[in-house]
Length: 537
Length: 82
Image (tube, rainbow over all chains, first blue to last red; front, top):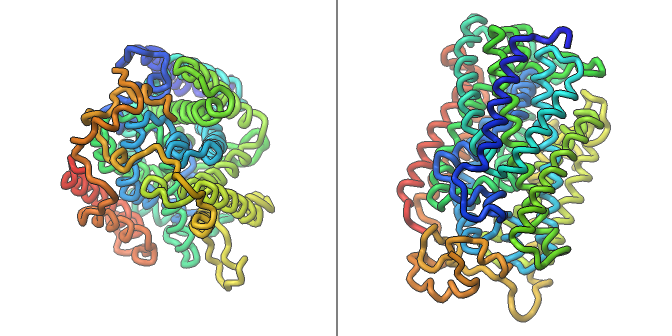
């Protein structure tokens, strides 16, 4: 414990304890009459109103890793790191119409995951299992990365080896998620975002004031960035245009395909709640935009990243180090707590979403078709523990770079379920076998393109980045494109071309009706407790 | 609460929903933020600066309130419609 800043650490631990207590007490919050159901544990009873949904989905999508990694990218590579802003601006207009259809059809059939919907729409457990596996594989490294956020904070307070503290934090998180389900992160999200907003507002006023204004900060970055290994600048180089736009658009398309985003949407009480939130959620992007600028403030303030256990500088520590350097210890402690709590909320939601997906789309159809709602809830609770400890193991046993590389892959593979889920929400025209073939092609192509992409900075020959150089196909340019975009287009083309050929003669399996995509809570004839309809899936 | 599954479909004759995919004109407004932010060649410049912040940054940040306003207008004008 030598070298640990006692004030920072005490504030951090105090706030963590308050949040942990809230996590356990959340089990009693808005309690339903039947706790042993997946809807209760895994979707908080499908009852969250506008405000709770706003905090829950915001807390879910804007994670600790985002807070740490986006400024770190801006710090190292400059303007390209600002893609996070257009990404989170365009995500909501794109998802606006899709999300309300998903909410309505899930409400009328009791779907808990997007794979549930796919099974109902196409009558294919195989396609649903592929969707489910994609979701789980994409989510695991994301949970692991949340721990990178906590680790960065602990390193900044002076911990040389933060593993023990990390394990304790995750055991506590696992325990209250197990007992309270989605209610825990929903309640804690209020604290998380209040703290984050407080920190960001103070940081974007106070730090530039100390450093001599925004003009000086950008000028310092303009001088320093071209000398760094990435040779960035405060504006984009022309060959970066395509990467910037495709990264923003692709990440936006991928965002709401992740199981944890779907969980946040389906936990909303009404179609109107979802719709209103799509309009209100971009407010978070403002915070993210200013957070990104902390990367430049760190350059101007001369912040040096902490060396990790192997002696290499860990750029993920630049935001905590900036706070440590610029703020008094007690306020830096609050800022660290905000980042750490910002990791706990999404980690909980992600593990719940992965657990729900496993239970509903792999366990029940393949192992226990007769599973009762009670058994489903119990299996999900246990799987949420397994998922979290799996993520912990990834972080403790493998280099952090592995989780980062894997998360890059996550966004590219999750977008491969777009044809089944998003196109499926509008039309049943595509065939299940054709969609599965398109998915296989899209996945294989993505992994091959990732394999071909080196990272000159870490000297990795393969899986070095998510942007594919167009020079691979003989175009004489330095431009690169985010791999998910071309591969999902090919995936969709394969599905569309094969569909008329593979379409089974006779009845089309589809348990949904066009009207289901428009229902609102309380409509005449719509089953209010969705699980009573679950037996039909 | 427990209506037996399968039976609710018949009772739904009076649901005020419309069949099919209808794209209302208001929904086209949702394309505006995409055009405004996804073409970096339009805004990739340092000057004019605003309070010391290069154009590249304040232009994109400005799109956040614009996007919220547009999405909210679409929400408000299509509210209650299905």
